[in-house]
Length: 195
Image 1 (cartoon, rainbow, N blue to C red):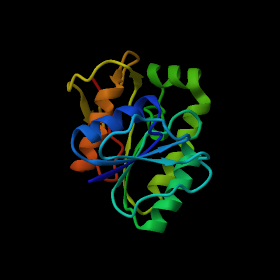
Image 2: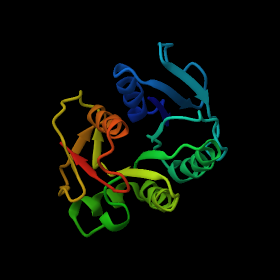
Image 3: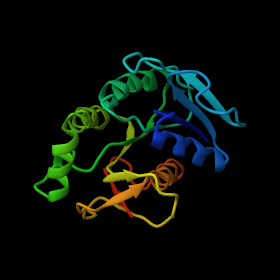
Image 4: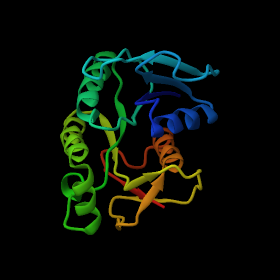
């Protein structure tokens, strides 16, 4: 399978790239500058310097968005245009717990909005673009991300409780994203994931 990774050179994106390659997939990594990755069999870098421009995408594969910061809505808007132009139909995107209907009165939600409201607003703008796209999509809503090594011990589901101490390692998140690309379990759903 071809796995197209948006935000490939970011902290989560790098784990997605390495996980997909380790499983034998071809990976197209969208990066801002050439040479972001050490050359490796199965890996192709595609330069995407400006997320407001539609990127060059292959005509087959699954797109995984690991875009972060405040570039999610712009990046997804451009990627959706590019996906439709080449006929790609499957998109898996990382968002965050606390977005839209998961923006509740919980301590976790209040804390994350107090700390990174601009990023949360960007994800709130991104999600309707995806759900209204007509594609087969999955929006993954993790809590706090950490840089722990992969454990393989995590839970995913639409109604998992997220507590103020909840977190997930980026390596485990990447494994889940590639699992979902290989065998869709949450098509047109917004699963949460936590260890």
